Image 1 (cartoon, rainbow, N blue to C red):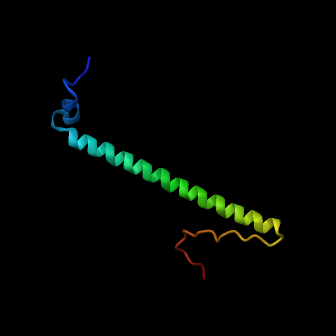
Image 2 (cartoon, helix red, strand yellow):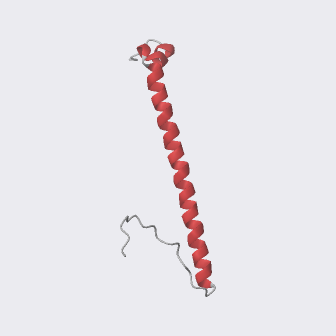
Image 3 (cartoon, helix red, strand yellow):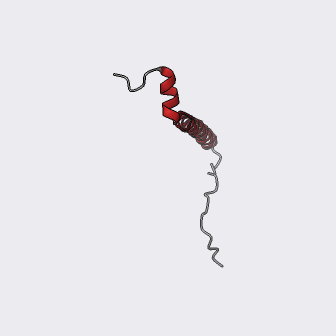
Length: 76
């Protein structure tokens, strides 16, 4: 048994349809953006690791990128 009489009633959802569908759209957009960002970061890490491996195999001292410091305290 369907809860809605027709497809147009399903889309309208008794007046709540625009809010519901905008929320679903925002969620899908956010999730897609997060997936794309994660993939680009993964590829960047893999490229950097391949570069470091090539340097190491060539005999050059491989220097990793400087680690980020989140400390606001600067020792004197």
